[in-house]
Length: 293
Image (tube, rainbow, N blue to C red; front, side, top):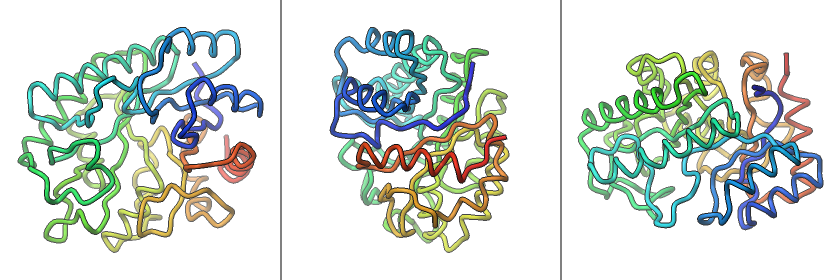
């Protein structure tokens, strides 16, 4: 099982079908794809992925809300509603089993919410939504991750992605709605779960915005989280909003990249709206600026 090289996220190719994404990447010699954001279900998904892996040489990892269900919902590992929780666990179990069939090294999932959100709520002000008691949400998230850890077994790892905290979602100056946005929350979650196959996927765009929201330096947060991080989502922004902007030579995290255990870490380009030509340039930039041991 290999986990080296740079992946492209489906989020960077939005607006295209999965089949078109595969053709576009293959034509440019890019054959590592993170299966995440898509517009809806894919007909013949299993056969499409099997053919791409076995005959075309693609490598896949699966992220969060994939395969996309016919009836959209918010995947929340901290849900305490029995029916919603069952839907979340079913999607995750399907993703884990598919990951294992694709020989993927991990399945990654967003941290949980303490609000009852609908798909259209995400990315905006969540403070007006009905809330789950913080303690109950945290307990549910620990239990969910333990169940997913058991499901994965020794086949693959389970990674938790950090949330992005924007100023509109601060409550009384702190983070009440998105446990898993701050380093202490992430590290505390891993300690509570206490499973060797559970780690972190750190989204560096999220980290930058959240640190700015809290008046902190993202560089210090990077160094704290790097030892337990097994994958990175790479994109950039100006620190005020999670815009999923492209990478350039001035990206804030390049000087820190050598402190991450890159030889066993997946690097995933998640900048949005990239042209086919820019996909290649972004990949070459990451390969040049993020040392591989």
